[in-house]
Length: 152
Image (spheres, rainbow, N blue to C red):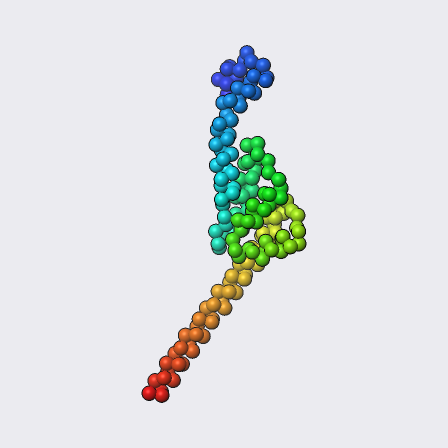
């Protein structure tokens, strides 16, 4: 407590001090709770970004709300993180829900680390397939044009 605040409360009993401090700081805490809640409920993972970084950010919001006096159920916290994952993690979410996995947020983050490696490998494989298939389409189109020219 700052020296000025201590001087203000010297002649008050504990109950009055607590009441006065709440009066001073509750509005600020309420505003911060609102803003943190808004961020927690609206933040979505951007495609291509790190799922681990996203989960850590969400965990930060959850912990901040706890400090501000709003304690959330663990299952709700996990669900909020899962809901915000990008579409490339839909298989991970499906497996998590189907297997009724029950984890803490740190355990979920570790699972996401593993899943993130798998998703990155899958996206690289898709890029390779797409680039090779588009190349074969171009070759087929060139062969068609060459045949048409030969016929004429």
